[in-house]
Image 1 (tube, rainbow over the protein chains, first blue to last red):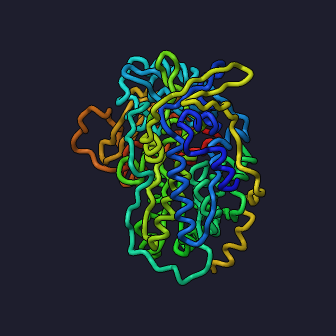
Image 2 (image 1 turned 120 degrees about the horizontal axis):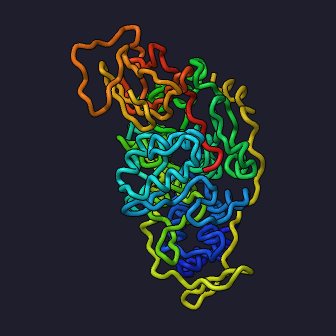
Image 3 (image 1 turned 90 degrees about the horizontal axis):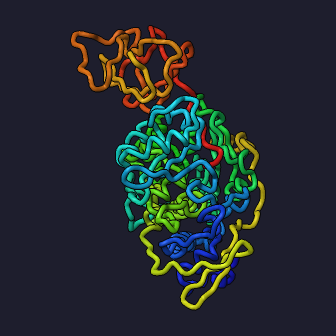
Length: 428
Length: 102
């Protein structure tokens, strides 16, 4: 989409409720059998800010580009997800009432459902959501979150996350290096999976980087199988390398790639790298100009680095929820913290590269969602219409609630491991 | 030893702590470092030492399995001892699969 076309669609003069309606996110917010709901935040102003940092950073590196905000809704558009109220669009997360507020619970992995009896009691063969609803009702949010996180569950107290003034944090790890003399495209090693990290890598590819997606043969990125068209949007243009992280030889090869990279993108927790002997301290010692983009739920540093979180539960934790007529929360958008974090991470990576590297870009879902939640909206607008089409009116403007859309297809993702031999040959 | 889901245990001889995720199909003793584990709130018995045959260590965040009884425990604090059930060292479960859709 050209810059001009985007301005036509998202004229900055439009009030927040109109832009929310036009974004495609509002259609993903609200009960399945009722009207889409407003959001009490100027989310698209936050998105503008994140996109401006990417476009400025890319231009500063001599690689001007534009970012198409339809990326916010493309997973839903390409996989047919719709709004489901207090169940996330993807279906794995729910909002559950606790004694002193609301809890966001996400159980996307088989092992999560098995952990519910250890968290809240209940029979081993019982529907885990029945056990969660019953177990949460009489208990306090702080206890539910602490005990759930102790079992590696993705849980958050709705609206209790920190508002953040910065979408990402940059931690100085090494002196940096002057790379302005080289005209080569920056080399990005993308070790991340799912949505936020891969989106960051794809935005860096659009800014002219050479991006190599590296996957573990025992733990490949599941999106390739689960949502192929969405995977293409996030991966087209990246090379694909498959390594066996349990094999000492492949670990040596991975370490060699990290020592040569300008940027590495990760989405695992710190302890996963510690257990592989790939701590940032060691990698930066051998590559002082590196930019390490660390996607986490709640930040890389300290105890927070152990937390598990995904796009829906973290967004709700940060308060990015809508409300029904009774004041009960509803999920907003589809895994909203994921695309926000991908944008924030790419902007932070470009900024760190522009300063010569030597930084860990601490890009947490909680930080990006908390940043978006710092943009308050002054009005909700008025939602009217019916099943044949919903509209929003605000400050004399009227807009139809737009369906989720995807960015245009730009090619297929490389087949799993298609470039392994060639990339390893070049590294020798 | 009531190994109910959610029950928390600590090693008598090292730093290891564990949470039971799946109970055993028949009663069994959960051990670490060659000694029975103790409930998290209890005092450690005095005079016990780490058995060198059970000193391979436990790793924070890993899930440990006893194939014979189905007992599954999540290590909530790593230590020097090996987790075991009735003398059988527990095995590490494969890393949790990433969700195909969240």
